[in-house]
Image 1 (cartoon, rainbow, N blue to C red):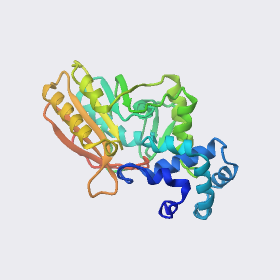
Image 2: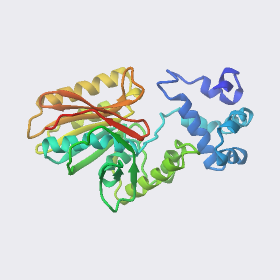
Image 3: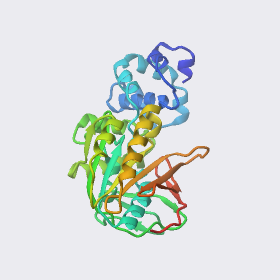
Image 4: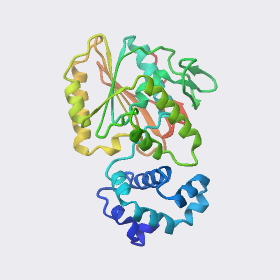
Length: 318
């Protein structure tokens, strides 16, 4: 952002960015564009810089970054126009405790509806294996094993049955499309080789049976879907690190749609709102679960933006 302060011509499209730079993840948009340029081989010098993944060297590379952005304004504009789509699959390790809690409490198949799903990789949580050191979960033959630290008691021992999995996004990414895969990889930084390998293994998992992700506004999508009853299913509304990208109006409509549907919920057709989002005044995101009938809200635990650790707080057992 030093280049921006200096009014460098290479980043003038950044200076014109509308909205709150922090809430809109402006820095991540620019970083994603630069990494994509390097990955695509558009600039040999930038590709060389990224291959070393040396932060100290990067700090001295302002002229290179400026000239690269100036020469690739088309790519920069594309990345500035859309929120980052990290689709950090390790967040499934944080969400897993919520799904196990729901499955144990209701003992019904789950219909999982994810807003801001990107490529839907976290919708496939049950196809990954998890290693929390003290305990493991998931299929032995999974293409991807997610390792994370787990602090506190273990969540309920359950085996969720997924009856349906469906997502929406304003710009859905189809893992069968090469452009979509490249975009996903561009948001994983060059020195994070473990994250890149994890992403590639999750993509390989998804390619075997891709989740259905619809191009839709989250509020419109949920309002329509929640109008349809799902007897003998637990309807699970899911999102992770998405809420900040939605405007106040959309947040209000989504909350109202969920609450309205919750008022109609029954033990034969319960509703659950499971989300991993920033907690006010906390450095780590919280995993919250609200369930109907009843509308009880619980803070299940404190997670991690990149899925590195979960501190489990919930002591309730249904």
